[in-house]
Length: 223
Ligand SMILES: *Cc1c(COP(=O)(O)O)cnc(C)c1O
Image 1: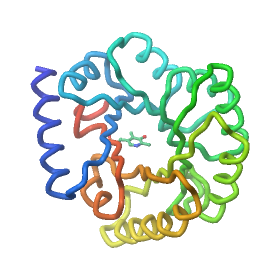
Image 2 (image 1 turned 180 degrees about the horizontal axis):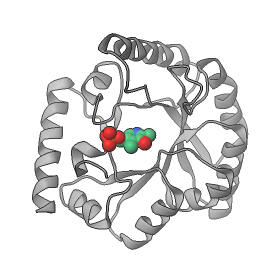
Image 3 (image 1 turned 45 degrees about the vertical axis):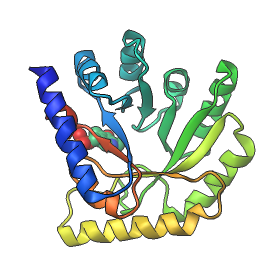
Image 4 (image 1 turned 90 degrees about the horizontal axis):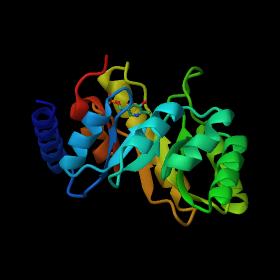
């Protein structure tokens, strides 16, 4: 049942991606609140990047899965969780403060590893939303490049608001596209732009996403 569901979901996701773009985006299967069996079924379909939002859940799942799953941390980061995140994640999408970057860097140094990080950008300018304002990306990016030698700054992550009208969503996507164009040429290794979820990945791919974070369209609805 589960195997079959996830097989079909992955097949239709891939077909939709092919009709949206010629390129091959990285697919991060967002497994938050989903069981280890869900993740194993996705691994059987050739998916090996998984996204988690909670540090304890990441640790628990990463410890119980031996296969070569690659873990992405995509949720808000509390400073007392940076050690757990550094221990298990290969990618962190949600860096938004110098203090967090410093702590992740220190833990990676202690663990003798390097980690890929993205800066989360607040593109819709909403007070309640996570991410740095577009104008604050530059200083944070410079800090990471200059002071965090165990972090590899690879690009930007965006989580545009889903509650908006079609028009407003397109405007968010335009802002993302401009932000990418404005910033990436200033940094050497910017090659990863993480945006697009189950609700908006086809349009995200048209606006320059090369990493989509898809949960429900792979694993089914969350409770
Ligand atoms: C939950 C989540 C997703 C995936 O959302 P779906 O609607 O399940 O595709 C992507 N990104 C972040 C940051 C999330 O928290």
